[in-house]
Length: 234
Image 1 (cartoon, rainbow, N blue to C red):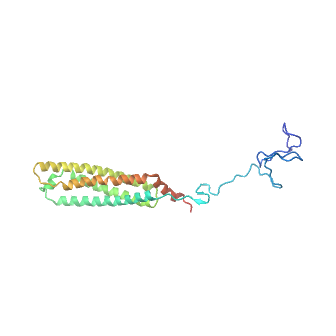
Image 2 (image 1 turned 90 degrees about the vertical axis):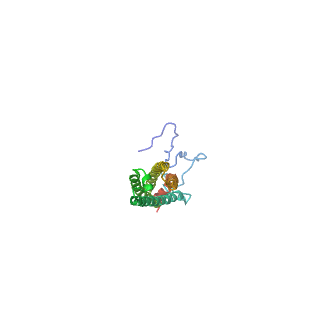
Image 3 (image 1 turned 45 degrees about the vertical axis):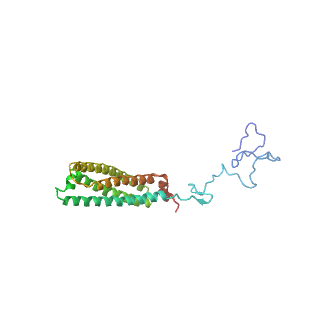
């Protein structure tokens, strides 16, 4: 099969070489126009060109230098706070259980027992169970985040949300107990309010740590640090 001359082409013109776009062979005896690339002698043009691919298709290196690994400061801090929060939840449940045991051994005519609301014991039992569950979630989430497991962030957020909720509920319980004790004082019962005030202040302080831990766990830097292990070249 011969190449057909196209309209407007001079006689004897050769077909274009597709290996060098824009290059058309000059007529015999004439030099190519200035600026037109000429393929080296003896080297056939490559059909359509050969695509060049980067040795690093995922862009993990630039100029031969690897990208710096994301900082793990926020993730490590969130993991440590989560573990400490889990230990604190377990300690809180132990304190509640001890307090309930002490109250159960007191005489019903005791002024402190008489000043407590009827629902106080049941409410404290529920709070102790919730604290054990919350502590377990926080411990697991903290360890998972320190080992760069992405789902550890979710476990920490869930555990901190439960801890924050129980702290708010505990604050209302403290107010209710304080009001009941105040009523007994007005009736002539000699009850010390120092423990109730201290418990309320402790509940307010406890709300700060879950909020800080949630913020650190949800920061983009924490997620990037967890993902860096997954996509890091071996």
